[in-house]
Image 1 (tube, rainbow, N blue to C red):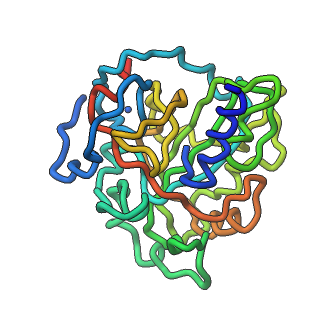
Image 2 (tube, helix red, strand yellow):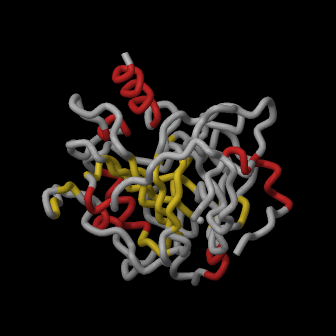
Image 3 (cartoon, one colour):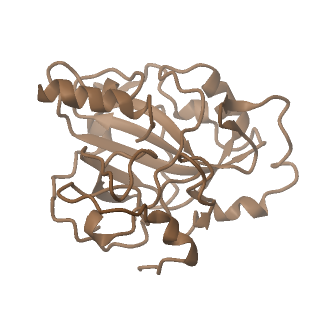
Length: 281
């Protein structure tokens, strides 16, 4: 029963509401992080968070996972605007609706050149919620599992019949999209059948955007709030610096990939209550 329940939870995370580090004071916009209603209790630490703050009081600790290179890549997806907040992505996007139009934008978006902001010939990664444009911010999640699995659609791909409760780890990177083919190529960060030392791995994940902030958290996505917590335990590794990504390469990836991903998903509002956050050590 537990295995079926967990599989059902994972399978719906990307179908219904897809998802899934010196202290800075909360700015005037962060009232949006509070969902109202009674705060959920008894759950493990939640995500997303301000990764520049190490504070957290949630004591339902769990062991952090192994390095992602010792786990199997099981899913790649992205969110429109950053779910997390850091010094380099701290421009509040707005209250939004159903997870869209919220989150945080990269601070450098306003410094992009005219060429980098040049409009596209056709829409990129279009969905019912719109498409992506040069200057937009996205947060990409490379999800890894300790189970013996092959990358595939939704977080259900992170389970196997022999391991229904694996360790989960997300490597996260925030990008600002530019119309520049000399910027990073997202197809070089995809999967494409890449296996290293016996593990399914992305072809590459940025390693020059600051030391990742690693912490215990949960799955994300707009269905979760301060009063509706995610029950799943996830080790997060969030890079604190923004990188420029060629939007043309991302558009091509959206047209065809192993994960059935063709658009950017909505975000969960920032979790700010220390009772819902783990301490970053």
